[in-house]
Each structure stands twice: as structure tokens, then as C-alpha cells.
Image 1 (tube, helix red, strand yellow):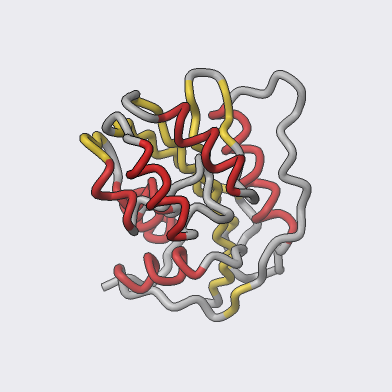
Image 2: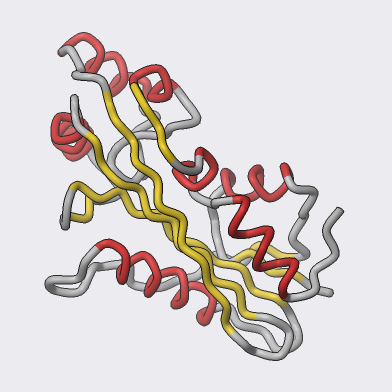
Length: 188
């Protein structure tokens, strides 16, 4: 059974390896990830994950795609591309709880789409200027939703996590494994 991962994320490959899964192909989806006007975080995450899977759909193969959204209330925080964006996002999250939604979409060999959603609540400590500057200097924020990578230095700045660590990283393993099993993918 051929499995295609519709992602360029090395983290997603690493996470799949944790459950003994190695995709047969990694084909990043080229889609517009701009939120629609007024789009809320959960529908956005689901729409983007589905669009990624659809973009690389291949007859007879399983196609796995995911999207992770950091949300402060109804606001979708961007994947930060500049230090100024990362600073603004981290200042917004400092000392607060926020939600991380990780949507997973799997198109099975018959072309049926299945999906799951993981919701996690993350609480950052109140960041001092020294902590913020040190984290920004690390560069880990680049390209990360909400300006942080939980699997790196930011983990020491997180006071509490309720939910899925792997979901906050970008691919909730419990939900992903359930989708693969339901599609008949051989898992140990």
C-alpha cells in the first residue's frame, strides 16, 4: 500500500517514524494557505489539510496531509517569516493560554477522505525581555506557526500543555495512527 506524505516538513517525517511509518513519497503541496476573510481557526485548519491532500492526490495511493494552526481566541497567528512577526506573536502569547489545532486528512486508496482534529491548550510563562531576545536569537521561530517550535528551546518557556505534544509539533500521532489503521495501512 503506497503512502504519500503531502508535506515538506521534516518534523512530520520524524513524527511518522515514531510510529514506524515511512512514506513511499514526500510530495509537498503547493497551495495558497491564506486564510479567507473572517475564517476561524478550526475551519481553516481543516480546509488547508484537505486542500494539501487533494493537491497531491494519486489514484490507488494513500495521501496524508496535515495543517497546524496556533490560535489566540478567534485569531490565527501566522507562520512567522521575520523576527518582528515572531516577536509580536510571542509577546501576544506571553503569560497566556492559546489553542493549537492540528488537522489531519487522509485520502484512502478508493479516494475517500477521512479527517481528524487534535486540539491542545498551551500556556506560556510570562516572557522576560532576556528570554524573548534569546529565543529570537536562536532562529527556531522561523516559519513556525505562532513563532515557536515546542520541540526546541520554547519547550522550556511553556508552563502547561493540555493535549497532544505531537499535535503541537505538527502531526498528532494518535489521530494519524487511527486514520491510517482505518484505511488498512499496516502498522505494528
